[in-house]
Length: 472
Image (cartoon, rainbow, N blue to C red):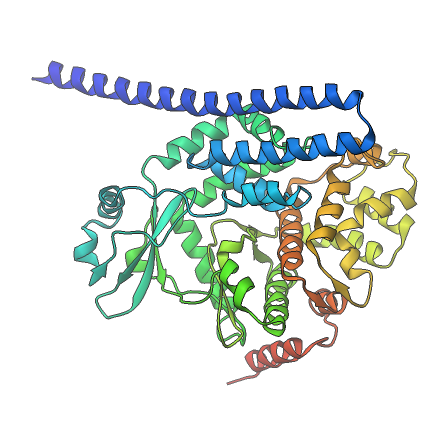
């Protein structure tokens, strides 16, 4: 009996390997076809543009951007795993594209087709040892949200607590590993989009190094619980509690949170409410970066719930950055010099931090002008974020054929700062969509320098911090 059994196992293993190989080839072929189409289209645009006026070239490039965005969204919309995650990352920073292209890419931020209820139940059973109906008083087999790695079901605990149960797609870990092993595939997918001047290598390498953590829901649960403890009792920041007895490597259960989603909030909120919420988002990001040493690296519109009392709940802690000893201290001299408009000091700090070689040979004024672009809102007493500013600023920063091309080619972004860079631009994009106006420089100084509160929310938060420090 042993020989047939061994043979059967071998055959089954070979079938699984063949299936995985076919799936990888299928995914690779889809992305290469996408890349080939966009490259061919761009060649046509360049050929036509060579004989066109500047105005005609601008129209050709705008049409190319729109068609590329539509093509990317259509091709990647149903591809769960790293490929879709990469598309989501790019769609969120593509503020410099035409509105029609942004609208097409926005579909990558929306829910994706969910898995069958039986598959979700299988994952729960494998991870928690019983069917959902046995583990929960009530279980909704229809997910309330579906994303690139997993989907969320609403359930009720035996004690009556409503919970959100995030269930990972079966096999998505294999798909992601396959995608991440093929870095050139990801480089090609990013390059297929209209932002043809974007040096995508750093962005893709960040994705490859961080997505393994996102697959481990136990890691996410620990991060979420840690950040919840930091903000326990906070006056306007909420973090849902993890339910550890209903969580595992591929299942994460947290308390259920009602509230307005991003698009509904933008549509329904008054201007005053919108401005308050924008400040809450900014304070959560900056307070975490400069005060806590650990911060959420995914400023995604779907990760917030807005409440009538002015509080905001923050969701999804799969991508969390933790400063190691000396990392933030290495960066701060650069920021200090930049905000002081010290051109020579900024350049020297960049050299000391490893962003520039000592023999770079660039004019300090040009270097300061380039690297300070994301920090323009903090160079003045008051600033209004707009989508136009974010798009134009990002366009300047990634234009490797523009006036800063020599500086761009000389700069080296240390890996430890890539997540921070994503947060800076992601937050700018969010605030731009909210039309947020505030004293951002003074608010930032609260967290970086311990400056006095600059706004009413700052005074409320300062009182909370003081109360936490007071002896019981």
